[in-house]
Length: 105
Image (cartoon, rainbow, N blue to C red):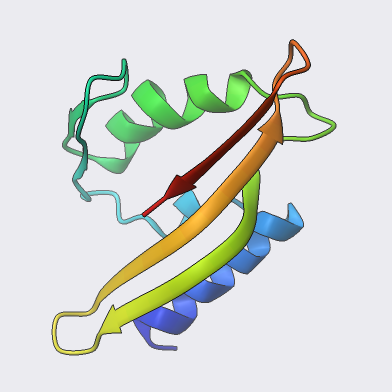
Protein backbone atom coordinates (compact mmCIF):
# COMPACT_ATOMS: atom_id res chain seq x y z
CA UNK A 1 0.00 0.00 0.00
CA UNK A 2 1.20 3.52 -0.67
CA UNK A 3 0.91 6.28 1.95
CA UNK A 4 -2.36 7.64 0.54
CA UNK A 5 -3.98 4.20 0.77
CA UNK A 6 -2.67 3.68 4.31
CA UNK A 7 -4.07 7.02 5.48
CA UNK A 8 -7.38 6.51 3.67
CA UNK A 9 -7.83 3.09 5.30
CA UNK A 10 -6.94 4.50 8.74
CA UNK A 11 -9.61 7.22 8.43
CA UNK A 12 -12.18 4.67 7.22
CA UNK A 13 -11.40 2.41 10.19
CA UNK A 14 -11.62 5.33 12.61
CA UNK A 15 -14.95 6.49 11.16
CA UNK A 16 -16.27 2.92 11.49
CA UNK A 17 -15.11 2.76 15.11
CA UNK A 18 -12.82 -0.21 14.52
CA UNK A 19 -9.50 1.60 15.09
CA UNK A 20 -8.03 5.03 15.70
CA UNK A 21 -6.00 6.96 13.16
CA UNK A 22 -3.09 7.06 15.61
CA UNK A 23 -2.42 3.42 14.74
CA UNK A 24 -0.45 4.66 11.73
CA UNK A 25 1.62 7.27 13.61
CA UNK A 26 5.35 6.48 13.78
CA UNK A 27 6.75 6.32 17.32
CA UNK A 28 9.28 9.04 16.48
CA UNK A 29 6.81 11.36 14.75
CA UNK A 30 6.65 15.04 15.59
CA UNK A 31 3.42 17.01 15.77
CA UNK A 32 2.76 20.71 16.12
CA UNK A 33 -0.51 22.42 16.94
CA UNK A 34 -0.50 26.10 16.07
CA UNK A 35 -2.72 28.54 17.89
CA UNK A 36 -3.75 29.59 21.36
CA UNK A 37 -5.60 26.49 22.55
CA UNK A 38 -4.47 24.52 25.58
CA UNK A 39 -3.19 21.84 23.19
CA UNK A 40 -1.03 24.25 21.14
CA UNK A 41 2.59 23.23 21.17
CA UNK A 42 5.23 20.91 19.77
CA UNK A 43 5.12 17.18 20.54
CA UNK A 44 8.35 15.25 19.83
CA UNK A 45 6.91 11.70 19.79
CA UNK A 46 3.70 9.76 19.24
CA UNK A 47 3.53 8.99 22.97
CA UNK A 48 3.92 12.66 23.95
CA UNK A 49 1.14 13.65 21.53
CA UNK A 50 -1.13 10.83 22.69
CA UNK A 51 -0.61 11.59 26.39
CA UNK A 52 -0.96 15.37 26.14
CA UNK A 53 -3.59 15.73 23.42
CA UNK A 54 -5.40 12.62 22.21
CA UNK A 55 -6.18 10.95 25.53
CA UNK A 56 -7.53 14.09 27.28
CA UNK A 57 -9.52 15.00 24.14
CA UNK A 58 -11.09 11.53 23.92
CA UNK A 59 -12.13 11.66 27.60
CA UNK A 60 -14.41 14.58 26.78
CA UNK A 61 -16.68 12.43 24.63
CA UNK A 62 -19.50 10.01 25.33
CA UNK A 63 -18.82 6.36 24.64
CA UNK A 64 -22.19 6.32 22.82
CA UNK A 65 -21.04 8.97 20.30
CA UNK A 66 -17.26 9.38 20.48
CA UNK A 67 -15.40 11.87 18.35
CA UNK A 68 -14.79 10.50 14.86
CA UNK A 69 -14.42 11.70 11.31
CA UNK A 70 -17.79 12.16 9.62
CA UNK A 71 -16.53 13.39 6.25
CA UNK A 72 -13.21 13.34 4.49
CA UNK A 73 -13.32 16.30 2.14
CA UNK A 74 -10.01 15.70 0.39
CA UNK A 75 -6.85 13.66 0.56
CA UNK A 76 -3.77 15.06 -1.14
CA UNK A 77 -0.64 12.99 -1.55
CA UNK A 78 2.83 13.97 -2.71
CA UNK A 79 4.38 10.77 -3.98
CA UNK A 80 7.84 12.33 -4.11
CA UNK A 81 7.96 13.09 -0.36
CA UNK A 82 5.43 10.52 0.85
CA UNK A 83 3.44 13.32 2.48
CA UNK A 84 -0.32 12.90 2.83
CA UNK A 85 -2.62 15.76 3.85
CA UNK A 86 -6.23 15.11 4.85
CA UNK A 87 -8.99 17.74 5.07
CA UNK A 88 -11.76 16.29 7.21
CA UNK A 89 -14.74 17.05 9.43
CA UNK A 90 -15.12 15.46 12.85
CA UNK A 91 -18.04 15.16 15.21
CA UNK A 92 -18.86 13.70 18.61
CA UNK A 93 -21.10 14.22 21.61
CA UNK A 94 -19.39 15.32 24.81
CA UNK A 95 -19.96 13.75 28.21
CA UNK A 96 -22.12 16.77 29.12
CA UNK A 97 -24.33 16.29 26.05
CA UNK A 98 -23.06 19.03 23.74
CA UNK A 99 -22.04 18.28 20.17
CA UNK A 100 -18.51 19.14 19.07
CA UNK A 101 -17.99 19.61 15.34
CA UNK A 102 -14.88 20.95 13.67
CA UNK A 103 -12.85 20.81 10.48
CA UNK A 104 -9.25 19.67 10.55
CA UNK A 105 -6.27 19.34 8.24
